[in-house]
Image (cartoon, rainbow, N blue to C red; front, top):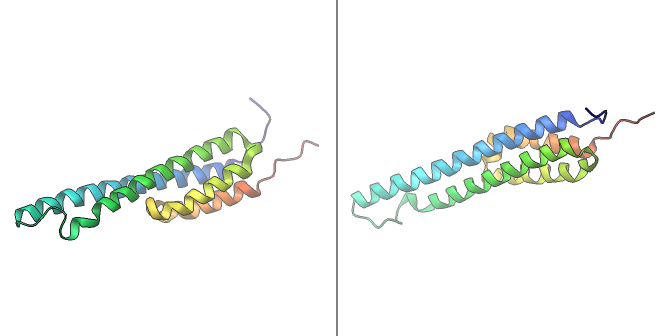
Length: 134
């Protein structure tokens, strides 16, 4: 085991933020697909065209959910890399911060809790200083 100190608090906060953003993205993708299918069946039952009516924008919800899944995976990967390569804490902190903010558009910001944890975790990762070896 190495004696190297790691940014544990930013890692944990960012990892939780990534997991919440991933779950938010999965939820959005599921709801978008379910709503699209449900509204399509309902509209066909009433004799309307498939793309007409309230179900029309559901593919965009599904696409946003898929973006949330991607953003969540990027946050998780950045948090893991932050823990494995603490000397590059600024790079990983910036990535965590950017994709946590972008997670608003795709993963509901991890139910907003993930957004807050991602911003705090990314900021702490950027500000983290390795302890001196003296």
